[in-house]
Image (tube, rainbow, N blue to C red; front, top):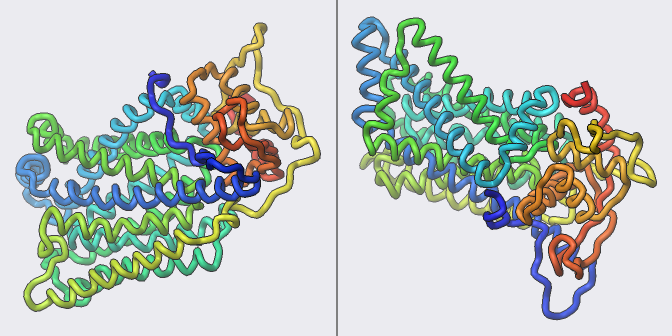
Length: 506
């Protein structure tokens, strides 16, 4: 299936000029393209994230899906408070969102030919998938908090409340992941946060809310900020050694499993949260809205996770925080300014003015981070020298059978580090060809994916670019840049740590 699919855009690609240029110029252009790729992913994340609020708001107006569940809970439990009823509906909606995303990503990874890598990553619980389990739990906290904030206050507040998540993400990425953030990067993050808060400050000042429990709405906003902040850090750690598409799929599978267990517990206690699940397929309108929830949120996360290896957690979250501005714009387009912003005649000037000011400030923050010097972002961590002159410290091999075939394959990124640890510095096409031969990956699409992994691992600081030449013979991508990679001290340390965790070393 994968052989018929057009290869994904490779951030290492460039179009050669008609006039000859030196290698140094091509390398600088190559680095800029990688950062641009990360920025594009971050901006697309913001767009998809903003779109997600449209079906997320429309779902409350569906006559069957949520209303019938709420009515059933009230009928069977007359003493159940309105707030408790609403919270249970939020649990159902969050679980439905996670299940829809997991199903969409099964199709996505199946089309990309990554389901074998999904299995390889899943079984490596101690080394890889445990991080996506944690990310799924953090994400469950964030998404449920968003729905709680949207229900008890407004979708606009829910969009803005989560904007504090880059503060947590930035702090933890520097302290825990040891990622670099420049002064300009910090400034851009602060400006983006200020812009997002300004967007909705008018509504907060005007106090236009008829919520039955605004405190629960505020708690939901805090849950969103904390959940997404920590999820970004946990995912950033996992993506050092896992592919973004596969890791994201695991994250949603774990979240879906978490909510199914929670809903089963509620159902066992007499609160049937599965009561209206059949309406998803019984009413075309319900199905379309749920499908849009899954598609928009899945694509949002795909691009969010792909931005981390090239921009780092702090910058990726900062660019992604533009979702607040996008959400306000899309809500205005589909539901009108009054419903989206929640103003009346008395507060219109204040709320509309703060919205426009916030959008302008967000654009300034985006400009600051988009124009940051790309040379300092070749590696997101402190520079690492190769482990030694041969690029390796110890011999590690995959277990082989009598015919020389690998018995049990490790996740691709881990195996790439092994190849460079054993063989020393090698050209990209040499590493790609070796891994593809071992794993039975034969298409050009597969080669592009593996080359993409090498680029991500260089950004993470596990590999180092040692040399460059133009691929005049078509060894990997004719007339494009070839890179010689060497494993760094950080890569060697990571390999040593993973040897005690990866399943085939037990």
